[in-house]
Image (cartoon, rainbow, N blue to C red):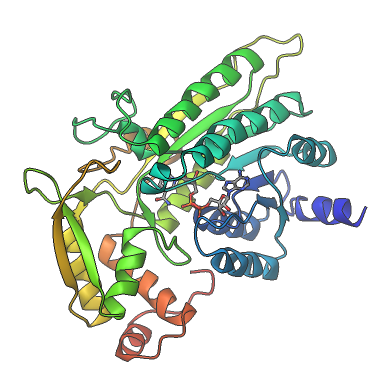
Length: 370
Ligand code: NAD
Protein backbone atom coordinates (compact mmCIF):
# COMPACT_ATOMS: atom_id res chain seq x y z
CA UNK A 1 0.00 0.00 0.00
CA UNK A 2 2.92 2.35 0.77
CA UNK A 3 4.22 1.46 -2.66
CA UNK A 4 0.88 2.32 -4.30
CA UNK A 5 0.66 5.62 -2.43
CA UNK A 6 4.09 6.68 -3.63
CA UNK A 7 3.26 5.61 -7.18
CA UNK A 8 0.00 7.54 -7.20
CA UNK A 9 1.61 10.60 -5.66
CA UNK A 10 4.50 10.61 -8.19
CA UNK A 11 2.28 10.26 -11.18
CA UNK A 12 -0.28 12.92 -10.30
CA UNK A 13 0.10 15.97 -12.55
CA UNK A 14 0.30 19.41 -10.96
CA UNK A 15 -0.77 21.51 -13.91
CA UNK A 16 -4.37 21.49 -15.14
CA UNK A 17 -4.71 18.90 -17.93
CA UNK A 18 -1.13 17.85 -17.27
CA UNK A 19 -0.02 14.39 -18.35
CA UNK A 20 0.58 11.40 -16.17
CA UNK A 21 3.62 9.73 -17.69
CA UNK A 22 5.40 6.45 -17.11
CA UNK A 23 9.04 6.92 -18.14
CA UNK A 24 10.81 3.62 -18.75
CA UNK A 25 14.59 3.78 -18.54
CA UNK A 26 14.27 6.77 -16.19
CA UNK A 27 17.64 6.05 -14.57
CA UNK A 28 19.23 6.16 -18.01
CA UNK A 29 20.76 9.19 -19.68
CA UNK A 30 17.85 10.42 -21.81
CA UNK A 31 15.23 9.11 -19.37
CA UNK A 32 16.61 11.07 -16.43
CA UNK A 33 16.73 14.33 -18.40
CA UNK A 34 13.22 13.88 -19.80
CA UNK A 35 11.81 13.00 -16.37
CA UNK A 36 13.23 16.20 -14.88
CA UNK A 37 11.89 18.35 -17.72
CA UNK A 38 8.41 16.82 -17.53
CA UNK A 39 8.25 17.19 -13.76
CA UNK A 40 9.48 20.76 -13.99
CA UNK A 41 6.57 21.76 -16.22
CA UNK A 42 4.05 20.06 -13.93
CA UNK A 43 3.38 16.65 -15.43
CA UNK A 44 3.12 13.59 -13.19
CA UNK A 45 6.17 11.37 -13.70
CA UNK A 46 6.84 7.85 -12.53
CA UNK A 47 10.05 6.06 -13.56
CA UNK A 48 10.81 2.41 -14.20
CA UNK A 49 14.31 0.99 -14.60
CA UNK A 50 16.05 -2.31 -13.96
CA UNK A 51 19.38 -0.62 -13.13
CA UNK A 52 21.29 -3.18 -15.16
CA UNK A 53 25.08 -3.10 -15.19
CA UNK A 54 25.64 -2.52 -18.92
CA UNK A 55 27.57 0.52 -17.72
CA UNK A 56 28.51 1.84 -14.29
CA UNK A 57 25.36 1.30 -12.16
CA UNK A 58 26.53 3.95 -9.69
CA UNK A 59 25.95 6.59 -12.37
CA UNK A 60 22.35 5.35 -12.68
CA UNK A 61 22.01 5.55 -8.89
CA UNK A 62 23.30 9.13 -8.96
CA UNK A 63 20.73 10.05 -11.58
CA UNK A 64 18.10 8.36 -9.41
CA UNK A 65 19.22 10.48 -6.44
CA UNK A 66 18.99 13.63 -8.57
CA UNK A 67 15.46 12.68 -9.62
CA UNK A 68 14.52 11.90 -6.00
CA UNK A 69 15.50 15.46 -5.06
CA UNK A 70 12.79 16.55 -7.47
CA UNK A 71 10.27 14.07 -6.03
CA UNK A 72 10.51 11.71 -8.98
CA UNK A 73 10.27 8.08 -7.90
CA UNK A 74 11.82 5.23 -9.93
CA UNK A 75 10.45 1.73 -9.53
CA UNK A 76 13.13 -0.91 -9.81
CA UNK A 77 11.77 -3.48 -12.23
CA UNK A 78 12.10 -5.04 -15.64
CA UNK A 79 10.10 -4.46 -18.81
CA UNK A 80 9.60 -8.20 -19.01
CA UNK A 81 7.81 -8.31 -15.65
CA UNK A 82 4.24 -8.37 -16.96
CA UNK A 83 2.66 -8.53 -13.52
CA UNK A 84 4.47 -5.45 -12.34
CA UNK A 85 3.56 -3.47 -15.48
CA UNK A 86 -0.07 -4.58 -15.30
CA UNK A 87 -0.28 -3.55 -11.67
CA UNK A 88 1.31 -0.18 -12.41
CA UNK A 89 -1.08 0.60 -15.24
CA UNK A 90 -3.96 -0.61 -13.06
CA UNK A 91 -3.06 1.71 -10.20
CA UNK A 92 -2.38 4.76 -12.36
CA UNK A 93 -4.42 5.88 -15.40
CA UNK A 94 -1.30 6.94 -17.32
CA UNK A 95 -2.06 9.22 -20.25
CA UNK A 96 1.36 8.53 -21.79
CA UNK A 97 4.31 6.18 -21.69
CA UNK A 98 7.69 7.57 -22.67
CA UNK A 99 9.48 4.34 -23.41
CA UNK A 100 13.25 4.79 -23.33
CA UNK A 101 14.39 1.59 -21.62
CA UNK A 102 16.47 -0.51 -23.97
CA UNK A 103 19.73 -2.31 -24.37
CA UNK A 104 21.76 0.38 -26.11
CA UNK A 105 25.23 0.23 -27.68
CA UNK A 106 26.32 -1.27 -30.97
CA UNK A 107 29.43 -3.33 -30.18
CA UNK A 108 28.21 -4.96 -26.96
CA UNK A 109 25.77 -6.96 -29.10
CA UNK A 110 28.59 -9.13 -30.36
CA UNK A 111 29.11 -10.59 -26.89
CA UNK A 112 25.58 -10.18 -25.52
CA UNK A 113 23.07 -10.66 -28.31
CA UNK A 114 20.32 -11.97 -26.04
CA UNK A 115 20.12 -8.82 -23.93
CA UNK A 116 19.08 -6.88 -27.07
CA UNK A 117 16.37 -9.37 -27.92
CA UNK A 118 15.18 -9.45 -24.33
CA UNK A 119 14.89 -5.69 -23.70
CA UNK A 120 14.32 -4.25 -27.17
CA UNK A 121 11.99 -6.87 -28.60
CA UNK A 122 10.46 -9.04 -25.85
CA UNK A 123 10.39 -6.14 -23.34
CA UNK A 124 8.80 -3.79 -25.85
CA UNK A 125 6.15 -6.36 -26.79
CA UNK A 126 5.42 -6.96 -23.12
CA UNK A 127 4.90 -3.24 -22.55
CA UNK A 128 2.59 -3.01 -25.57
CA UNK A 129 0.62 -6.06 -24.40
CA UNK A 130 0.01 -4.39 -21.05
CA UNK A 131 -0.75 -1.00 -22.64
CA UNK A 132 -3.30 -2.44 -25.06
CA UNK A 133 -5.30 -3.87 -22.14
CA UNK A 134 -5.04 -0.79 -19.93
CA UNK A 135 -7.97 1.51 -19.41
CA UNK A 136 -7.34 4.19 -20.56
CA UNK A 137 -4.85 3.04 -23.16
CA UNK A 138 -1.84 5.36 -22.89
CA UNK A 139 -0.28 7.04 -25.92
CA UNK A 140 3.23 5.72 -26.34
CA UNK A 141 6.29 7.66 -27.45
CA UNK A 142 9.32 5.43 -27.76
CA UNK A 143 13.01 5.63 -28.66
CA UNK A 144 13.98 4.15 -31.96
CA UNK A 145 17.40 5.04 -33.34
CA UNK A 146 19.27 6.54 -36.29
CA UNK A 147 20.95 3.14 -36.51
CA UNK A 148 17.88 1.86 -38.41
CA UNK A 149 19.27 3.66 -41.50
CA UNK A 150 22.14 1.19 -41.41
CA UNK A 151 24.02 1.11 -44.68
CA UNK A 152 21.74 3.74 -46.27
CA UNK A 153 23.92 6.24 -48.13
CA UNK A 154 21.29 8.81 -49.11
CA UNK A 155 22.33 11.95 -47.31
CA UNK A 156 20.78 13.40 -45.14
CA UNK A 157 18.58 10.63 -43.75
CA UNK A 158 14.82 11.15 -44.10
CA UNK A 159 12.16 9.02 -42.46
CA UNK A 160 11.09 7.64 -45.84
CA UNK A 161 14.56 6.26 -46.64
CA UNK A 162 15.32 2.56 -46.75
CA UNK A 163 15.85 0.90 -43.37
CA UNK A 164 16.28 -2.62 -44.71
CA UNK A 165 20.02 -2.92 -44.10
CA UNK A 166 20.78 -2.74 -40.38
CA UNK A 167 24.51 -2.99 -39.67
CA UNK A 168 24.24 -4.32 -36.11
CA UNK A 169 21.96 -6.45 -33.98
CA UNK A 170 21.14 -3.30 -31.98
CA UNK A 171 19.91 -1.65 -35.18
CA UNK A 172 17.97 -4.77 -36.15
CA UNK A 173 16.14 -4.81 -32.80
CA UNK A 174 15.32 -1.09 -33.09
CA UNK A 175 13.99 -1.67 -36.59
CA UNK A 176 11.98 -4.63 -35.28
CA UNK A 177 10.51 -2.27 -32.67
CA UNK A 178 9.18 -0.05 -35.47
CA UNK A 179 7.55 -3.02 -37.21
CA UNK A 180 6.07 -4.27 -33.93
CA UNK A 181 4.70 -0.79 -33.22
CA UNK A 182 2.96 -0.88 -36.57
CA UNK A 183 1.08 -4.05 -35.69
CA UNK A 184 -0.06 -2.78 -32.27
CA UNK A 185 -1.24 0.42 -33.83
CA UNK A 186 -3.06 -1.41 -36.60
CA UNK A 187 -4.78 -4.08 -34.51
CA UNK A 188 -5.27 -2.46 -31.11
CA UNK A 189 -5.52 1.22 -31.92
CA UNK A 190 -2.52 2.17 -29.78
CA UNK A 191 -1.11 5.62 -30.52
CA UNK A 192 2.61 5.16 -31.15
CA UNK A 193 5.30 7.71 -31.94
CA UNK A 194 8.85 6.51 -32.62
CA UNK A 195 11.80 8.86 -32.26
CA UNK A 196 15.00 8.09 -34.12
CA UNK A 197 17.65 9.69 -31.91
CA UNK A 198 21.02 10.58 -33.43
CA UNK A 199 24.09 10.14 -31.12
CA UNK A 200 22.82 11.98 -28.07
CA UNK A 201 25.46 13.50 -25.76
CA UNK A 202 25.65 15.78 -22.74
CA UNK A 203 25.90 15.97 -18.95
CA UNK A 204 24.94 12.75 -17.13
CA UNK A 205 25.72 10.94 -20.40
CA UNK A 206 26.66 7.35 -21.12
CA UNK A 207 30.18 6.14 -20.32
CA UNK A 208 30.07 3.66 -23.21
CA UNK A 209 29.88 6.45 -25.80
CA UNK A 210 32.97 7.86 -27.55
CA UNK A 211 32.76 11.49 -26.37
CA UNK A 212 32.57 10.21 -22.78
CA UNK A 213 35.41 7.69 -22.80
CA UNK A 214 37.55 9.98 -24.98
CA UNK A 215 37.25 12.60 -22.24
CA UNK A 216 38.25 10.07 -19.59
CA UNK A 217 41.16 8.65 -21.61
CA UNK A 218 42.50 12.02 -22.73
CA UNK A 219 42.55 13.22 -19.11
CA UNK A 220 44.33 10.02 -18.06
CA UNK A 221 46.87 10.28 -20.88
CA UNK A 222 45.66 7.05 -22.48
CA UNK A 223 45.63 6.36 -26.19
CA UNK A 224 42.30 6.71 -27.98
CA UNK A 225 41.21 4.82 -31.10
CA UNK A 226 39.87 7.05 -33.87
CA UNK A 227 38.19 5.17 -36.69
CA UNK A 228 38.47 5.86 -40.39
CA UNK A 229 36.41 4.22 -43.11
CA UNK A 230 38.15 1.78 -45.48
CA UNK A 231 38.50 4.58 -48.06
CA UNK A 232 40.22 6.75 -45.40
CA UNK A 233 37.28 9.09 -44.97
CA UNK A 234 36.64 10.17 -41.44
CA UNK A 235 33.73 8.65 -39.56
CA UNK A 236 31.15 11.36 -38.83
CA UNK A 237 28.21 11.58 -36.45
CA UNK A 238 25.26 13.93 -36.18
CA UNK A 239 25.94 14.57 -32.47
CA UNK A 240 22.77 15.87 -30.83
CA UNK A 241 22.74 17.72 -27.53
CA UNK A 242 20.56 16.27 -24.80
CA UNK A 243 18.49 19.44 -24.25
CA UNK A 244 17.48 19.43 -27.93
CA UNK A 245 16.47 15.77 -27.69
CA UNK A 246 14.46 16.47 -24.52
CA UNK A 247 12.58 19.25 -26.33
CA UNK A 248 11.87 16.83 -29.17
CA UNK A 249 10.54 14.18 -26.75
CA UNK A 250 8.26 16.71 -25.07
CA UNK A 251 7.06 17.98 -28.44
CA UNK A 252 6.26 14.43 -29.53
CA UNK A 253 4.36 13.77 -26.30
CA UNK A 254 2.41 17.02 -26.65
CA UNK A 255 1.31 16.25 -30.18
CA UNK A 256 0.71 12.51 -29.71
CA UNK A 257 -2.88 11.62 -30.45
CA UNK A 258 -4.95 9.55 -28.09
CA UNK A 259 -5.07 5.80 -28.47
CA UNK A 260 -8.42 4.80 -29.95
CA UNK A 261 -8.62 1.33 -28.41
CA UNK A 262 -9.89 -1.82 -30.00
CA UNK A 263 -12.88 -2.82 -27.88
CA UNK A 264 -15.74 -2.36 -30.32
CA UNK A 265 -14.28 0.86 -31.72
CA UNK A 266 -12.79 1.43 -35.12
CA UNK A 267 -9.39 -0.12 -35.40
CA UNK A 268 -6.26 1.42 -36.81
CA UNK A 269 -7.45 4.98 -36.33
CA UNK A 270 -4.80 6.09 -33.86
CA UNK A 271 -1.58 7.52 -35.16
CA UNK A 272 1.68 5.78 -35.86
CA UNK A 273 4.44 8.23 -36.55
CA UNK A 274 8.24 8.09 -36.74
CA UNK A 275 10.54 11.13 -36.53
CA UNK A 276 14.24 11.84 -36.78
CA UNK A 277 15.60 13.79 -33.80
CA UNK A 278 19.09 14.82 -34.84
CA UNK A 279 21.23 17.92 -35.05
CA UNK A 280 21.37 18.18 -38.87
CA UNK A 281 25.14 18.77 -38.98
CA UNK A 282 27.42 15.75 -38.87
CA UNK A 283 30.87 16.25 -37.35
CA UNK A 284 33.91 14.06 -38.10
CA UNK A 285 35.17 12.19 -35.06
CA UNK A 286 38.58 13.90 -35.50
CA UNK A 287 36.87 17.24 -34.94
CA UNK A 288 35.17 15.87 -31.81
CA UNK A 289 38.63 14.96 -30.51
CA UNK A 290 40.11 18.38 -31.26
CA UNK A 291 37.23 20.15 -29.49
CA UNK A 292 37.82 17.93 -26.45
CA UNK A 293 41.58 18.60 -26.58
CA UNK A 294 40.83 22.31 -26.41
CA UNK A 295 38.36 22.01 -23.56
CA UNK A 296 40.57 19.65 -21.58
CA UNK A 297 43.74 21.56 -22.29
CA UNK A 298 45.43 18.28 -23.14
CA UNK A 299 46.72 16.73 -26.34
CA UNK A 300 45.11 13.38 -27.18
CA UNK A 301 47.22 10.35 -28.07
CA UNK A 302 45.36 9.36 -31.21
CA UNK A 303 45.59 5.96 -32.79
CA UNK A 304 43.91 5.98 -36.19
CA UNK A 305 42.53 2.63 -37.31
CA UNK A 306 40.55 1.50 -40.29
CA UNK A 307 36.98 0.73 -39.42
CA UNK A 308 36.35 -2.98 -38.99
CA UNK A 309 32.87 -4.39 -39.59
CA UNK A 310 31.85 -4.00 -35.99
CA UNK A 311 28.34 -2.65 -36.45
CA UNK A 312 29.34 1.00 -36.84
CA UNK A 313 28.17 2.95 -39.86
CA UNK A 314 30.40 5.54 -41.62
CA UNK A 315 28.18 8.55 -41.07
CA UNK A 316 24.81 9.73 -39.76
CA UNK A 317 23.01 12.90 -40.77
CA UNK A 318 19.43 13.79 -39.89
CA UNK A 319 16.85 15.62 -41.90
CA UNK A 320 14.46 16.84 -39.19
CA UNK A 321 11.88 18.67 -41.30
CA UNK A 322 9.06 16.29 -40.28
CA UNK A 323 9.64 16.89 -36.56
CA UNK A 324 9.88 20.62 -37.28
CA UNK A 325 6.61 20.59 -39.21
CA UNK A 326 4.70 18.61 -36.58
CA UNK A 327 6.07 19.96 -33.30
CA UNK A 328 8.52 22.72 -34.09
CA UNK A 329 11.63 20.67 -33.37
CA UNK A 330 14.72 22.75 -34.04
CA UNK A 331 18.11 21.79 -32.58
CA UNK A 332 19.98 24.82 -31.24
CA UNK A 333 23.18 23.52 -29.64
CA UNK A 334 26.37 23.05 -31.66
CA UNK A 335 28.91 20.42 -30.67
CA UNK A 336 31.47 22.82 -29.15
CA UNK A 337 28.82 24.43 -26.91
CA UNK A 338 27.34 21.11 -25.86
CA UNK A 339 30.70 19.50 -25.15
CA UNK A 340 31.68 22.43 -22.97
CA UNK A 341 28.63 21.72 -20.82
CA UNK A 342 29.44 18.02 -20.78
CA UNK A 343 33.06 18.60 -19.72
CA UNK A 344 31.98 20.98 -16.98
CA UNK A 345 29.61 18.33 -15.64
CA UNK A 346 32.27 15.61 -16.02
CA UNK A 347 34.97 17.34 -13.99
CA UNK A 348 32.48 18.30 -11.29
CA UNK A 349 30.91 14.85 -11.11
CA UNK A 350 34.21 13.00 -10.92
CA UNK A 351 35.74 15.64 -8.69
CA UNK A 352 38.64 16.32 -11.01
CA UNK A 353 40.77 19.14 -9.68
CA UNK A 354 42.73 20.58 -12.53
CA UNK A 355 43.33 23.47 -14.83
CA UNK A 356 40.41 22.13 -16.88
CA UNK A 357 37.97 22.73 -14.08
CA UNK A 358 39.16 26.27 -13.47
CA UNK A 359 38.91 27.21 -17.14
CA UNK A 360 35.50 25.69 -17.61
CA UNK A 361 34.10 27.09 -14.37
CA UNK A 362 35.03 30.60 -15.33
CA UNK A 363 33.30 30.41 -18.70
CA UNK A 364 30.05 28.57 -18.12
CA UNK A 365 27.10 29.17 -15.90
CA UNK A 366 25.91 26.77 -13.26
CA UNK A 367 22.88 24.59 -13.89
CA UNK A 368 22.04 21.78 -11.51
CA UNK A 369 20.19 19.46 -13.84
CA UNK A 370 22.78 19.98 -16.53
P1 NAD B 1 20.68 4.31 -21.21
O1 NAD B 1 21.31 2.95 -21.31
O2 NAD B 1 21.39 5.35 -20.41
O3 NAD B 1 19.20 4.18 -20.67
C1 NAD B 1 18.41 3.03 -20.81
C2 NAD B 1 17.92 2.64 -19.42
O4 NAD B 1 17.04 1.54 -19.57
C3 NAD B 1 19.05 2.18 -18.49
O5 NAD B 1 19.03 2.91 -17.29
C4 NAD B 1 18.75 0.70 -18.25
O6 NAD B 1 19.08 0.31 -16.93
C5 NAD B 1 17.27 0.62 -18.53
N1 NAD B 1 16.86 -0.70 -19.04
C6 NAD B 1 17.44 -1.43 -20.03
N2 NAD B 1 16.77 -2.57 -20.22
C7 NAD B 1 15.74 -2.56 -19.35
C8 NAD B 1 14.68 -3.48 -19.06
N3 NAD B 1 14.59 -4.65 -19.72
N4 NAD B 1 13.79 -3.16 -18.11
C9 NAD B 1 13.88 -1.99 -17.42
N5 NAD B 1 14.88 -1.10 -17.65
C10 NAD B 1 15.78 -1.38 -18.60
O7 NAD B 1 20.48 4.79 -22.72
P2 NAD B 1 20.05 6.23 -23.28
O8 NAD B 1 21.21 6.79 -24.01
O9 NAD B 1 19.37 7.02 -22.24
O10 NAD B 1 19.00 5.76 -24.37
C11 NAD B 1 17.59 5.88 -24.19
C12 NAD B 1 16.92 5.28 -25.40
O11 NAD B 1 17.31 5.97 -26.58
C13 NAD B 1 17.24 3.82 -25.65
O12 NAD B 1 16.09 3.19 -26.15
C14 NAD B 1 18.29 3.88 -26.74
O13 NAD B 1 18.32 2.70 -27.51
C15 NAD B 1 17.82 5.08 -27.53
N6 NAD B 1 18.86 5.76 -28.28
C16 NAD B 1 19.86 6.43 -27.64
C17 NAD B 1 20.84 7.09 -28.36
C18 NAD B 1 21.96 7.86 -27.70
O14 NAD B 1 22.84 8.35 -28.41
N7 NAD B 1 21.99 8.01 -26.39
C19 NAD B 1 20.81 7.07 -29.77
C20 NAD B 1 19.77 6.38 -30.39
C21 NAD B 1 18.81 5.75 -29.66
